[in-house]
Length: 137
Image (tube, rainbow, N blue to C red):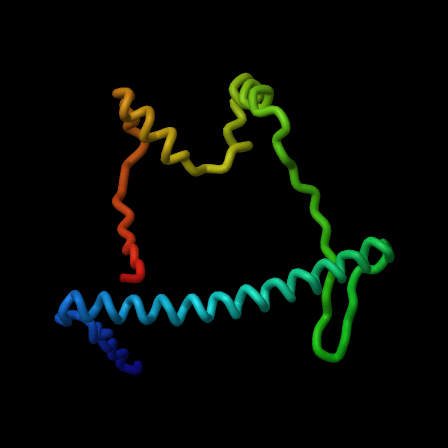
């Protein structure tokens, strides 16, 4: 059996002065902004092409795919649902005990409000999400 040797990834930034790290982080963020602008342009072009293909599909409803030597684009349709009356849906969910209709994520603002009012929520555990904010000097 071959021996697996794991190499530790060494962070070359550990031990550097925080001011140096701040400048390097700012430089990287500026580079990413330029890349993001380029990506946005490509994404906008992609959206225009997708819209043109969907227009083609609308004009040719029996068409299921378009193929070339390079690729095949398949048209897929799925019915999705939008809530038009939250009060009625909430009542239905409560009366029929159908919580499976809801997406399982809590609203942070609502939880904070309940906790501020003194409501105990033993079924929810907090965690700290850490972020860095970088602005130009």
